[in-house]
Length: 243
Image (cartoon, rainbow, N blue to C red; front, top):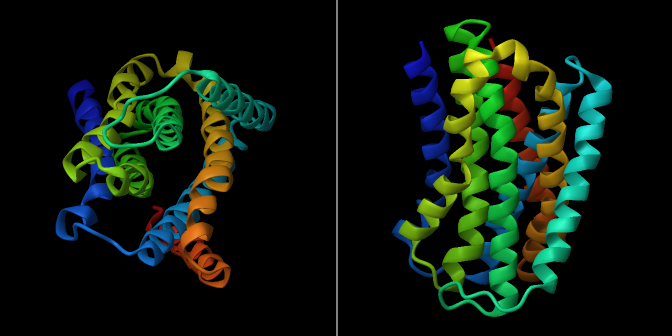
């Protein structure tokens, strides 16, 4: 079973790379399309963030809420650290674009630790439940890969490299899933804290970076409508696919 846990978690990480696939078929997108794609990613990630909180509350409401605050503190400190650093060299990006890309990859990587623990702990309740949780996380990961790619590809990074960076951001999932499965009772108390942490960091990222980019390129009415529909789509998946 340990090997199966690792494979399922690895597949969730690889699913993040699917977010870069649209760029494999179209080399240049209009700003309006990029804004629309950012709005889709924002809606899906926002719904996923509140789903993480919803999953954590029954385990421990105080630890989940503390985790949300810690996620916010982490991203604010990370943002401050990145802003006060010197220049970053990332492909053809300007310093500002490189900092934005680094922030998004950093947040996605940090929250992947919680998702890896979630995969491992879920297999403690049986293979069927673990497989379902892995599928749900894999679906959540695709818009995260899209969000990373939306920052990298339009600024000169190839879609292949964007896919690799997306997968890299999710590598903590297979790394954490196996020990979480083997020592489920040890890791279980940390799960609500990790879920809240991931949610807090992603909520900030959605409003501070992704929606800001969307509103720069697309009318606010279109962005608001797209975000709403994306949230409904993610919630429908979680409601109707759940066992």
